[in-house]
Length: 281
Image (tube, rainbow, N blue to C red; front, side, top):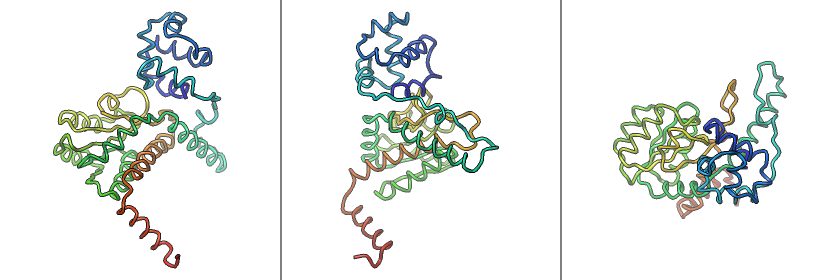
């Protein structure tokens, strides 16, 4: 999992951080008994450089990083799954095989990098919020619509519009008791950044669902739920990022529904079963 996280944030690292990151990927086993001072000396950097790298990886410090490193199983790098993309001359079978591989790897990677503390905080925030605004552009907006539909089931006062102007007007009415959820793969979508800045000025709590690594959204949001960032430049459709976003949404919703499971939700599931199987006893 450490190597996966390093790969996800490689474009956000300084030259010195990149040197340390490469050393970690090449010598992960020997690091388990190494101090931060020894790691810094071996790579001719300061301990503060290593601490910044740990922070970018989502750890509170070097000790937190070491705990995850020790508990992480060895993983082989699968270049075919991580780098294959759809080609225009691929056969039907080739396309299906590659789509399956990309979907599987995206789900596995998303679950590997999930921050359980952030996920737990996000569930709590959704439960306690009075009003919720969701916004995303393109396919991210469609994922937001799915989240909206599911949250209606637990009677949340929720809005998800594709129009940034409408969303801005709604966000301007929110308060500290409400919530804004922004979904953006890049974390740099101008409309999304603008809405989060507005929310910040109004002290409205925020959740960003975005790729791992530093971005404007990750710096602005109160809670960040990470998606995988590996998406080939020549992609035909955003398979990896969309599947990763859906995986985060599914984790969020399932944990939320478990906490909010009550008589109302029980009746919903019972009535749904009766409609689907009217003769079932």
